[in-house]
Amino acid sequence: MLDFLAVTAEIRRAINNLYDAWCESEARLYTLRIKGKVLKTEVYEYNPLAVGDLVEFTPYSETEGLITARLERKSSFMRWNVKLEKNQTIAANIDQVAIITSAFEPPFRPRFIDRAITCARGCDVIIIMNKCDYLLTEEEAERWALYRRLGYETLAVSALTGEGIDDFRRLLAGKLTAFAGQSGVGKSTLVNLIIDPEKKQTTNEISSKYHRGRHTTNHALYLERDDIRIIDTPGVRELLVPYEEKRELAESFVEFSRFSPECAYQDDCTHSGEPECAVIKAVEEGQIDSDRYMSYLGLLESLVSRKPAYLRTRFRKNKQ
Image 1 (cartoon, one colour):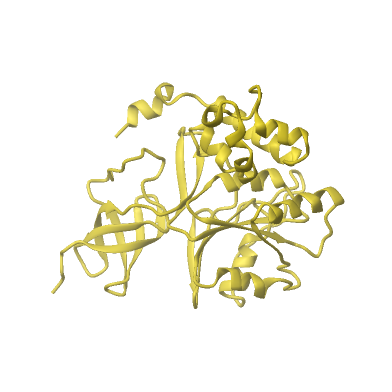
Image 2: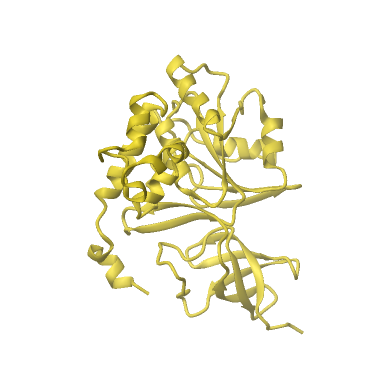
């Protein structure tokens, strides 16, 4: 006899309006739908549910049920969806985000890492350099070393030679980690080495025209082995800041925190031209890396140029 009381489950796969979710208390996987098709949440966003979300649902068979509520998220990895003009959560309730970059094909792109860092909320960030068997330029090596000086865990690995893979496994042990990276950096190949070395997941050749990779994962995948749990997110070419407040963007640049309390405008300072800005002064004096600061200014401009919420047609039409 089935128990029709609401129980809790973790979303493992989300495609269209169907969700695969693992119910720990019953040790079984359910296929779920949202009850009433619209899930009420406090924040309006592209997708009310993402892989990693915890939900309450009412089962109506041994393998199916209706989602009635989403539990509060402790963390997330999200981006701004330009087309629909709202945030899109890619992974939820994660312990850390592993930002995968590459030394070669595609080349090292620190501006992407900076953007990815701003997309992580409430969780740790680790930065992984794949294809470390290729050498970085002196300038690239200095920029790479900067992340460790800023306090981020960094690791150089090679999916080809196996260098650093065991150390990578140790960083992942006992945690739920979202993998994020540009297409072609070898993210899915690294997942294979960690989760199932014998499996040959499809990977595509690098696009020579754009010097970037082609997408190999079109939705988030929840994978686990022993005490390692991974959410492999789709490869992307661009990540846009999910913040609406300029202050939140500044807070994601950890090196600013040492100087921002000294700004004349303090909490209202955008660090982009205000007089007596301690952050700008620190950049001029070489205490803050100038390229990281330029990266910040680019992200700030993307926020300033974003259409206000009250002018977004889809927001007004679909507001819950």
